[in-house]
Image (cartoon, rainbow, N blue to C red; front, side):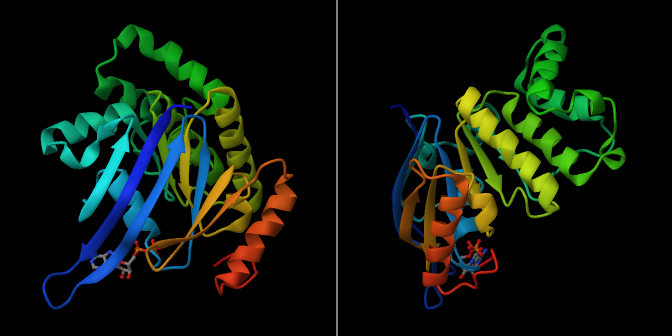
Length: 255
Ligand code: ADP
């Protein structure tokens, strides 16, 4: 199957001579089209650094990262912006919606920036809103909706451009458990129906249990990998908890 992401033997150092810390220590993995991958690991293990390097916000020290066959480490600054806009979708813990725009305008903005024709935008927004069950709040401003609704608006914005890869950083981190469940159901549906490829960093075993595969990171290395296979979500959750325990985290869902 088509590889959307190839991370090859990457390393990331911070600091300079005499005071270097290694945030990523030779990580390699692939993500295929339609995959839903979770990244877990204790605080300080390198998850954010990894996500920032894949999202082209930060630069790796050595190795290569290919997204849709393109080595992003060789892209020029001027090319990166277009690359991010066309190939990547972002979902952040704190939503990052523009407060002065309605939900529909927040979603449409991603298309406008891409240079899509104004006439075709409402139809595209309406289709994606339907997928995320936010049709009835499209004219509302972010402050008028709940956290869970905000995150579904942000998810619509992330996928409306049909990116190769959606990067989600603790997407349920600011949500109550019911809203988290609804959001994750949406992710599962987008992944199953639209083959949306998702890479999601999370601390939370329940959130991770929606993924098809999980990479556990410790001290900048891949420590373990789990595939959901034919497990129910509950069974997968229990296996995740076992690894979390092995990694030395507490079993209260959280590292
Ligand atoms: P996580 O997201 O898993 O909590 P991070 O990627 O934030 O981990 O951090 C990995 C390691 O890299 C940590 O030791 C952290 O202190 C270090 N680190 C992260 N960002 C920087 C930075 N900008 N400058 C120096 N060290 C950093």
